[in-house]
Length: 191
Image 1 (spheres, rainbow, N blue to C red):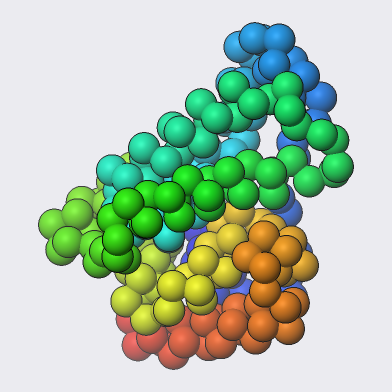
Image 2 (image 1 turned 120 degrees about the vertical axis):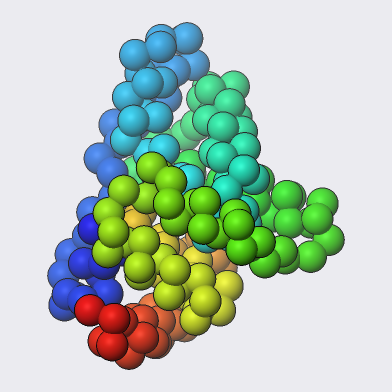
């Protein structure tokens, strides 16, 4: 329902990042399973959605999600508290996705059977979200899709997205608004 709500609701409605306590990282570094589990519970859905939006492949997105958490577990002692733990996590995810794309040497399209399997899977539980995600994957450019998923699913602020993607804030805002308009036009006839 998160994706659907962001497309049909007021674009100025506030979204929230997962509330991640930075104190989890030293606890994870010490091997505390409960801290790692808490971090995973709060962020795994957003990490998967972001990886899937970049890779457009279910299995690769799952692999990157797992690799992200393995890297977090191994590098938790290196985390420096700066008030943006979620951006730290998504930066790791993005770097792993870019490495995956480079190894592929091109950006792959979703095979029809993989697309159908993913949209029918339990990772995307809400029917409206499946409809919006299907439209987004077909209509939006890669950059528009990335910005939309980061804001709508992960709840990142536009300024954080601009920093993560190394884009001007005005570009992020215009691409996000353009994406929402495209999706609204597409979905008007389907709802």
